[in-house]
Image 1 (spheres, rainbow, N blue to C red):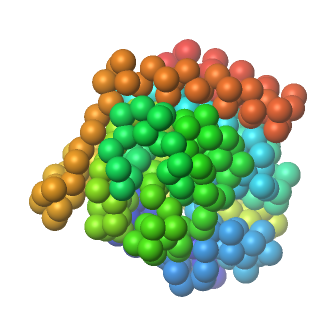
Image 2: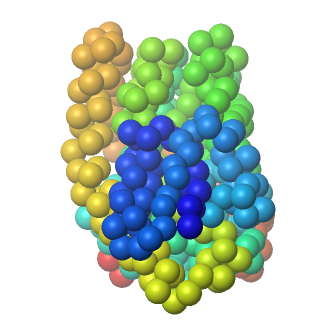
Length: 310
Ligand code: 6CS
């Protein structure tokens, strides 16, 4: 059969590299074919999720940043300073986390989705028009976030005026000054040329970009055991591949940004400067519990236990 797989990025960006490896593995180990649909071919993130739930697509990569309305608990990935900055620890977390492999698997299943993997896409950096060293510097800054209520709360707590927008409106929004800031991994900032429309790149160490790949569950459950095994193995192989692929990627991307735009200011917040941002995390965590109740509380607890065990 021919299986359709859509994702939120270009073919040469991290989600596209993952998808290409997944496709390669499926086609090597079965008679099936995988057709890849990069960002822009089938609509925004919300559109491809709808298509996957409807069974028009067999596979979809949607980041928790857009899954908040469907699965409120997925917003846990936007509690600032929850995930480790150390890559080894971070990778181990994604490899072993019970919150992901057991609890989130169940939550996605309730929405008709078979969660295949979650993986990190790199430390999130803010890019802004004016330099930022403190929450005060974000005052009155309309800061674009993915369409995720908890991310809105996080940037409120950081002192900004959060503006949720789909990806397609970000470059133009910055260009026309409708927004004055946004956050994304360095490699994505480089590949999408966001450095052309913002003048500062700020590292506060507050998060790593998480994404998730799933299959339509009716499709998945309708497959024979062998095909399901081929899919699981392809997801695992692509997972390890994408972690290795990303080694050194962020550093390289920052060099490319500085070469393309030498006047860009790179600001790495000191421990002292990070303090007020870290302090804001507690109130975001409270909001998360308010939004998700017992179920969210349970998953946050499990995530913290997973993180302690690294
Ligand atoms: O900021 C966004 O909306 C996009 N960022 C990444 C890293 N991937 C896809 C997503 O749409």
